Image 1 (cartoon, helix red, strand yellow):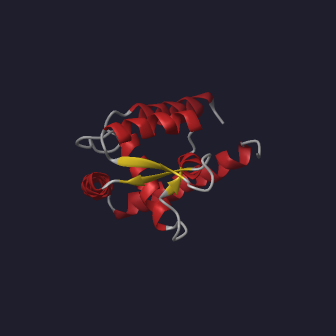
Image 2: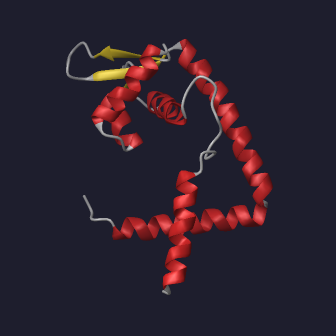
Length: 151
């Protein structure tokens, strides 16, 4: 590969990473908080019937975030009264997190904002370029996963 091609790809990836407008501006929460709420909601829906929400360790794993980073994010969401933590009665080491009623409302509102923004991006790209971009991003992910040391 020519140096110019490497520079071009690196510049494109860096500019996308730095793009301030990557994702819509959410009212009341950050994009990271939105995705965390989404993960909690999804994990809660798929949890055992006796569970009191999603296990914090599962949120950490699903979000690919360290436990301290998840804890900090949950503190922020708890301060905004969007989530609550519950300790398991039979094992105090296990902590669950679930959306409050306000959290469910915020997630729905933010979900609409995100999808509206994403629809506009797809409209601007067009169907053909959207399909090609998705194909290339997935190909890049597979390549990068293959280059990562396996855990």
